[in-house]
Amino acid sequence: MEPLLNVQKLTMDFGGIRAIDRLDVQVHAGQIVALIGPNGAGKTTFFNCITGIYKPTAGHILLQPPGKKQKRLNGLKPNKVTEQGLARTFQNIRLFPNMTVLENVMIGMHCRTNAKIFGAIFRNPQTRKEEQYIVDHSYSILKKVRLQTFANEYAKNLPYGAQRRLEIARALATDPFMLLLDEPAAGMNPQETLELDNLITQIRDEGLAILLIEHDMKLVMSISDYIFVVDYGKKIAEGTPEEIAQNPAVIKAYLGEDVEHA
Ligand SMILES: Nc1ncnc2c1ncn2[C@@H]1O[C@H](COP(=O)(O)OP(=O)(O)O)[C@@H](O)[C@H]1O
Ligand SMILES: [Mg+2]
Image (cartoon, rainbow, N blue to C red; front, top):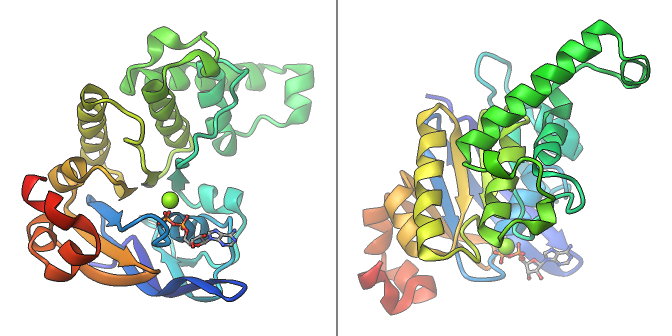
């Protein structure tokens, strides 16, 4: 089957630095795929290329939205990438701190709703109906990430782990078929990480494909269907969690002795 995301020979140069070097990555429907590697390996840069923040130096980013024509994403602006059904979270949380939890999710829905400025000013019946839908749907997403009781709290007042879940909620609000998560477990305690494991698995089971950057090896090994390992912008291994855990190049470059305990 055609992969939903097929990245071929992706290369990203910053001046003289080659942050990504001819990287091939595929994500298939129904999969949780992990992208792992040491700090500075180029993982976030990879996400930034796919989601239109950077224009890659070379290579192809091919997206196959279900039921639609394949689309080349190279050079698309971030909002256009989101419209294609690809949503992401950020390693450094990007929420609107002085807006409520609910409002942060409602903003995520913006790219899928039609209410234009005029509707917002004159508040015609169609706009009101759409607003009600946005509120209801945002609540249902908050419920999924178990933040509904915080709906009217300012985002900045949430504990760190909850802010990370709110980022996922906002990404889900754009109605994606694929979700890119950049270190979602960073800063979470073991209990929060366990809940995150369940949430990501649930989202996958509901039909979304997931591409995950994560340092928590226990989480990666437990939820991933497939893993790509990068070092210095190059792919050094790919395979199932079992294959990756036994790969000598991976152990040497990245996992070290921890792999036995993962
Ligand atoms: N905007 C940028 N300008 C210059 N260098 C960058 C930029 N973004 C990332 N890099 C460099 O690219 C490399 C990979 O960084 P990054 O993708 O953040 O790694 P990772 O997410 O795997 O830790 C690093 O050497 C980093 O300094
Ligand atoms: Mg990073």
